[in-house]
Length: 82
Ligand SMILES: [Zn+2]
Image 1 (cartoon, rainbow, N blue to C red):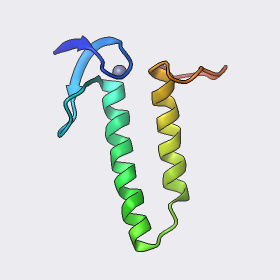
Image 2: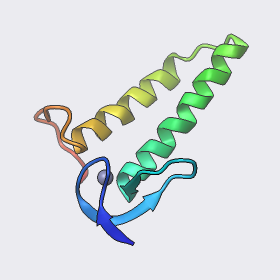
Image 3: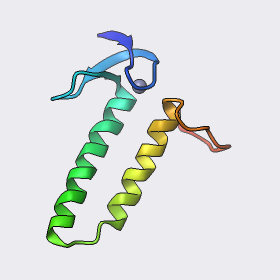
Image 4: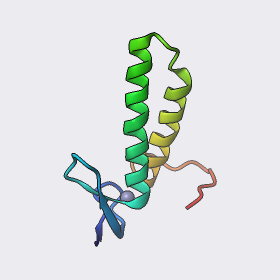
């Protein structure tokens, strides 16, 4: 199914995350899925008293890339893979 991504507003093939009503392109969908998994991992780690710094770095990196793609973050002079 093709349409406008709810996150980055690009027209692309859209995917629906389980349990969510918004539809996202493959890039946003995979970023969101990964972030959800990482947040869950961080919650689990915190419950167990495990250091979460590395996971938080990872989730922040993905979040910044996601925001940049969505035009929510002024893009720096940085090479992007898109
Ligand atoms: Zn998108």
